[in-house]
Image 1 (cartoon, one colour):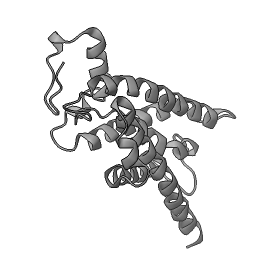
Image 2 (image 1 turned 180 degrees about the vertical axis):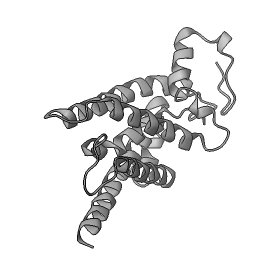
Image 3 (image 1 turned 30 degrees about the vertical axis):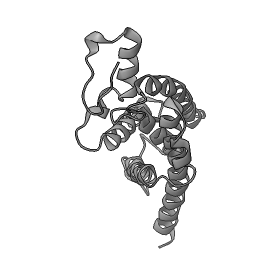
Image 4 (image 1 turned 90 degrees about the horizontal axis):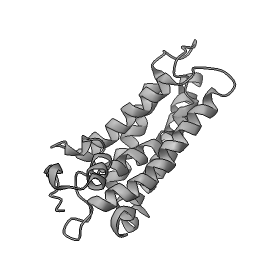
Length: 195
């Protein structure tokens, strides 16, 4: 099988396992975006996450725990599946194809961990009902910045072979973005309350 970057492979000549790997690895086709496929993949991941958050129970003693559990399943399961799927997309000639954006999905989900505490359904005296979406937008821009800049150890992890190299550098970028976006978010919240 030959992967050609942004070109769509001939699915008729692929095994079922390769078709499934391509579907997942390309972020359900978001990696086919002619402009910034990584950004398209991160955006698709954010949309999936927001849809899940709105579908989960709004309140109750275990609502936040349930949101965190769903996010943990997405991250852990997505990492395992992603190493397999992107590894099948990787070749010696093209070790990190442009269409392989599943790493952006999982990296974005890592960045979104703190938003599980957001009030996804109920307004309050201080915040409009849609305020969690601003936090998601902050996480999105933070993740794309760190995914592009690739601070330590992202660049080193990118050199790993196959699906591990494709996935782990974005997971590390997600951790960086998680820390920075959380600090920025809480700085904004403090400023809103005290200024």
